[in-house]
Image (tube, rainbow, N blue to C red; front, top):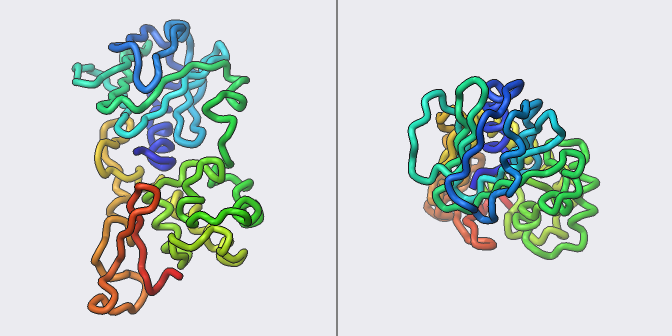
Length: 277
């Protein structure tokens, strides 16, 4: 599933082709993805795109008429911009711009969604009202995290992946951040000390910044807006490296078995049993 770095990368990639352009036509090739397409989707035709932002894992395309198109990529969705459109299976939404380029939403598993909202009403929208802070904003800090976690007995990894605690820190990035902060992903969230939370907040921010710079992680379906792949997956220290030697300590792989893999909340976690406590 595309997480914060992937969605941020897509948003940045869309800016050069979309901002200042007018939507000429909108075509939905089916009635719905995870939810039905908005009935008033045609209302963005002849409207100029003024900006593109991200909230959590949502792409937000803002129009001059004070509407915002919301796109979530689900498990397998991708948004690309093409100069010469050639139809592909699972192309579910096509937006043609005044430049002649076409924005294509392709979603093989159809777990994504498209919604339309008055821009001023976005904070109260049902998709956003429950969300925690952005991890790269100053509001996400050790004091905030300590307050949110002090009553949580669930594993720290699962707590960080709770979108009500902090948004967008997906499976890859929380595994990498916990490794950098020397914290066992199984540790109860309320047992992580304040000084450790300070390290964790810093590790989350640094990990996400590195991932954005690398264009995200291309493991399955994800590609950038121009169709190219991200490469953060090649920089991972623990994620997907089960059985390999820990890159940051002197653990004996013959004794420890190297990087360990467990399942938490239905998702794979990777960690070093010696380094992370």
